[in-house]
Length: 598
Image 1 (spheres, rainbow, N blue to C red):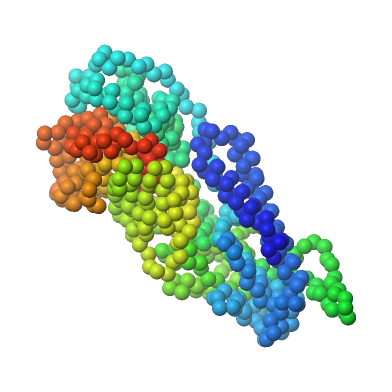
Image 2: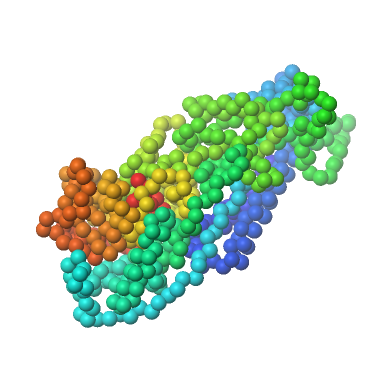
């Protein structure tokens, strides 16, 4: 089999590279023609990969007579590599006594009815660790934003409105804020949706009025991290998300891939016609050559209308599969079959389902064979129970997210991320993921494929009860947290839910020497995108209040707010943070959206 499938790993690697390009490239950098070209190439490579494995299976079956088992006379074969496992059984003797087959010392097998046990067939269970059936994700195309000219004026000439609640920030604070931002991340074009401190007074006023008019709209709009640049001065799209909640799937047997996802790869079930076998005639080896390649065996065949169910000889086929230890199911998974006509996954057509979570075994009966997969809820870990972002040193931090089922630590160092720890039993093999440094996009893909989906999609708000937050406020908060991540720890607060959609509330504390922040060391901060303040209440207070902490004042940014209480050592760490680290932390916070989904 190896020579025939030599090109398969290359094809799979090319598919992964093209998928990564589509996911990791900002939408505005890809033209519609490029997206169509890349997706078309992915589909062609999928077909090529499947063709190669069918070719390898055909070659193996042609040699089945020389690989027969000494006891049964039939061929049983297991071929395994990093990405695929092939289980093949060839019915050479057609003895009805051998109807229940179990491959080696695995739990994988099947039981076929007599009609198949006496036929020239081969049965294949072909498990791939990847999913090349589900439709490709839709690449969101950006709408052309309206740009405005920015006029940089001398800060001394700018006036502060008399009715402004915040105290005068002063030219020094404004200038320092600009220097901090521009020294960390390259400034990009500024859009009308996000006013900057460089705008004139009249421009800022008009933008605020426009934002007020759209207040009701933004309360229910989720943020789309993949469509937003995550630099501190990033541009925003004109629309964060579609206004409407996604339409529900009408057929209840069709799997809604916005709410559920295949996990653990695909189990291709095939009944194949056994090709002609080699015959030894004296010193000659004779084999009949047939055209058309690997042929499927139709089961069940068309049954006459006058045949009753009791007389039907074509009974269901029982299949047993083993779930790999490199994927994690936190609840009993659903089983789905691929519908080639509807181009989607369906949950009907299964009989007598059985699942043993401890032994990781699943069995079911089907009247015909299809590609099979296991389905898990996309939002099984949402909403999160709590979260905490802790510094580990200069340009190094860890994001801890606690869910109903587990506790996850993602470590960030410079521009790389890794899954540092996850609370599970010893029955899993996660060496492909745990402790492996990779880009944030690669980490998100790997964690989703393993069962640790803590990354909301643009539709997640329709499936999870969330804290509705203004997308602009939420994103600005993540940027500010990222700027301070080398010296400050941030954490979840129960008051965030009661602060309303236009404000976010979280805990913060300087953290340099110790591993964790003590409960009494936390302070509460509130931020609305334009004003930051330290709150007088704490987590144990009886009621929520926006009252300002004694001897503190309002500031225009979270950085300047926290700087009032920061040691010189922490401040130096913050000022020397690398822009790649700041960008990586911001991307991770945008991807997990801890302020909305906790």
